[in-house]
Amino acid sequence: MSELVVAHSPDSDDAYMFYGIASGAVRSRFKFREFLADIETLNKLAIGGAKLDMTALSAAALGFTKRYFVLRVGASMGDRYGPIVVSRGGPIRLIAVPGRYTTAALLLRLAMPEAKVVEVPFDKIFDAVISGVVDAGVVIHEGQITYMRHGLTKALDLGEWWYEQTGLPTPLGIDAVDKSLGEEVAEELKSLLLESIKYAEEHRQGAIAYAMRFSRGLGAEDTARFVDMYVNPMTKDMGKRGEDAVRALLDEAKRRGLVENNEVEFV
Image 1 (tube, rainbow, N blue to C red):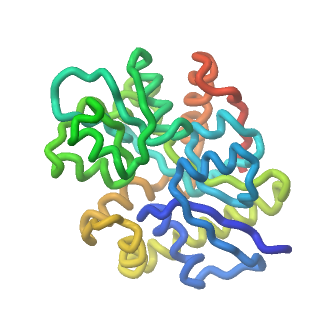
Image 2: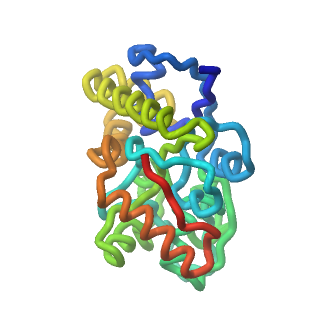
Image 3: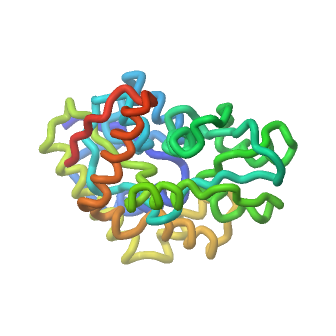
């Protein structure tokens, strides 16, 4: 087997999941080359046809590519919580979203179809809202637990909204394997990722310390809190509810003309 490019975002929850692999504790016959980039960059690369053998993706990005198997392991799903629309108060006319292909942006378009949106890098959304450049912004990653520290208020939790509409968890991020590698390889990579997550759970102190390198200033307590939000039982196996959530998101988005594709293959 040649070298495989494994891509994920430099965020604490992804780092925690890949701790077993990154630390060398989980061994395999594969040689991995790691590529780290923010989730919207990974979305664009995957949709554009870049060589990403195994990659984290926004669930929404599956609506623009059929190249990938979706692993039942490694998903970031929130049950009754998710990206948050934050503001300084007052009327909301213009909302910053963290990239066209993010699930956060898609959920906003589903929940607030009349809203005018503008793309802003996820790590600049707080600044854009605080400075008044935009009226509100959709925050992801650790911003979901720190927005109040910036003097901002919650206008809408998109995960709560999604649950009220569907009764399903919020399918934010997934891990995917290029179909050209074949289903057998995808199954093997799924098993390796599950082993890596279990290793992190069994060596939590070291895994949290490793995740803190990617937490953009969060302390250990907040890092652990955020990791536990998105590395949960559905991360080890999204189950039928998780699969239904991904399909429901893509089906509704396709019905509204927001994505091109609603077909998905799980491994």
